[in-house]
Image (cartoon, rainbow, N blue to C red; front, side, top):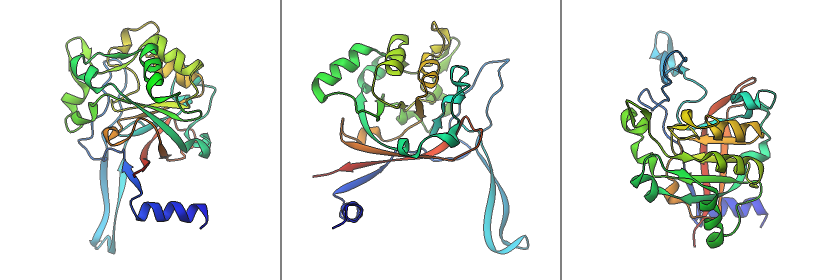
Amino acid sequence: MPLLDQLVAAIKSAAVEVVDLTAVLEPSTPIIQLPAPFANTIPFSLQEISRYDERGPAWYWNNISTGEHTGTHFDAPVHWITGRDRGDVATVPVTALIAPAAVLDFSAQAAANHDFLLQVDDIKQWETVHGPLPEGGWLLYRTGWDSRSASQREFLNANETGPHTPGVSVECARWLAEEAPVIGIGVETVGTDAGTAHSFDPPFPCHAALLGAGKFGLTQLQNLAALPPTGAVLIAGPLPIVGGSGSPVRVLALVERS
């Protein structure tokens, strides 16, 4: 049987499970909130064009309004000043959109400490158990934060000092950018950086280091708990927006089940 026929048959038989890692897009989908004087993205919305009426008797359709970085979305290198001379979302190689994934589960640590930061040593310890990070693949950082995604307040988890969400240390961000074999990092939070990363030196190290190195980000992922530590294959399909810094994305994982 041809290889692709085998894959289709495996999906139909549930020998390969397709896991949706994508948050739905609706007006209540959480969005990042930057403090003044910085500009913010708009919430997702639909504007009805016609719905089986005098505007269009046999069809229903809408215009949509949204930001590039709303809901589950893809960060292209040009999104950050360090990647300003690198590619937009339309130039991401299609071969990078289908890649293996390693899932690192630090949900217990994030539950105990909302400001938990992933360290290089955490990854090294994970590798002693599960093997090296996948060449040309994704590091998916599970924190359990997707359980908060129904509430803007709980998802951003902000107080008078700002948002408090788990992320990556400065050293770890540099290591992922410069030494790790992965093409990018995927997270369950509103962005790839920690909520307190505005106070780091340098600020927002995941954005600055990884995008500056030509790597990518995936954010607001769901259902990482359904994936094994290794062996999943990620399919991430952003819109090819010419000049775009990112795009809402449908992210699927293929998982072999015994």
